[in-house]
Image (tube, helix red, strand yellow):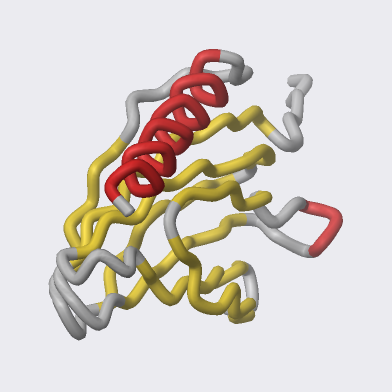
Length: 129
């Protein structure tokens, strides 16, 4: 059992490092604490596209977190369900009607989530005077 957990954490750390280092825009990995029973904003992006990479660590060892997107301008909610361990999320794109996207999460036990991003500006505008 210890070998499986060690291998999973090693893979998760390698995944986060590789994706953050190969990204269009590098940013530090953020560590966010989610208290038991609480809902927390995990990430907010405006006019960006790309991917988020996460690693979930929970006190109970199950490492699960319920996640969803809130997509503006109309406040649409897209449920992502319960996520476990490490993974990647595609940021909702402008083609899907997204101006901004907020990732939220809710934990049943004390949880820490590490989030790294690989993002680029989705649409740019030039104003000529």
